[in-house]
Length: 437
Image (tube, rainbow, N blue to C red):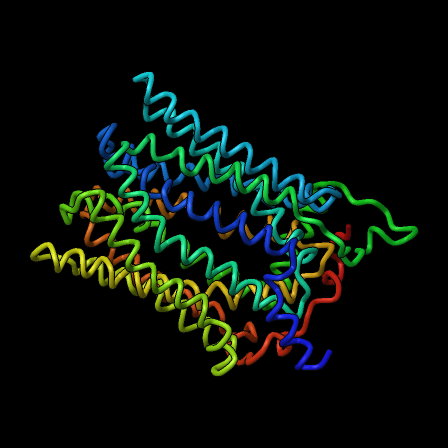
């Protein structure tokens, strides 16, 4: 395909009805998620008077189901109807979130209920997120991976601008539990929009689909996904980098709202406004990522983002003084955090989409998530323990310094020197001796 035709395809991506439907579904769902991310911990803090350790447990439970994603991914690779799984996951999350405002209206909301909802919505998220990589390559041509990831990341970034401000208003006007209705409705809309997507592409068949191949067991499929990640230098480097940054940023992430509320004495509305304004950085990062990677290279852009994302937590740790200073440093911290994470995510997500074979996508994603997302509960619990022992500010410094070291994992992966995705040789088949299926 010529460069001119490639440009034409990229420019017309949102004109594709199926991609547009999924883009809108993701946009609506992400906006609702931003409301929940503010409302959920505020329910624990303001309504149930939770301690830092209890807030950390709440965050940990959301991510705990990812430990099983290595098996979920192996199972998903065997399922022919990927779109149906995405719809089911959205409907499950909508139903679970609706139980919180209902319980609040009946004066029966408890921390135990929040824990259960957090755990089960996390399980539904594992189903959705592990299915997504296999669905993505049926929806988007390889030539459009960077463009599609940029657009989806821009949508996510925009939700960080509007979502926290909307969440702050809803929490103050309606209460935190009732604000969760917005996220429940967003999942219903997402399910309806995804159901409209029409898939015409077919994945590249894997070895187990070839005539005469011996079917593998679910355990063998799960093991092959994890083995593939560990044997591939590109994926191994990304996994180490992502796992490190997730551990440290979640040590602080579970405490940001708590720190802003109690440590900085900011209201729910001010917290939402500060997070929303700061999230402009993420929007700019998502839009600029393809341009910057084109000029400076995919690898260098990802590395800059990988350092900037966690290092910005140190800015929040410095917050003190008058209210304008406290809210200002919250905004600046969120701005550079969002900018960094988008430069990191857009490029490395596109790298992963390039190097993973079609028939291994969900099981590799599942294995990746089991480690990368599975570390998040440990990070959250570490943050809660440190905050209890040494305080909130030292915990933020711990996260900023430790997280910034994540990019050391990329040495030897081939990513730092990669200018384009074509510089990273696509994996054609599993490494010798791995289970096939």
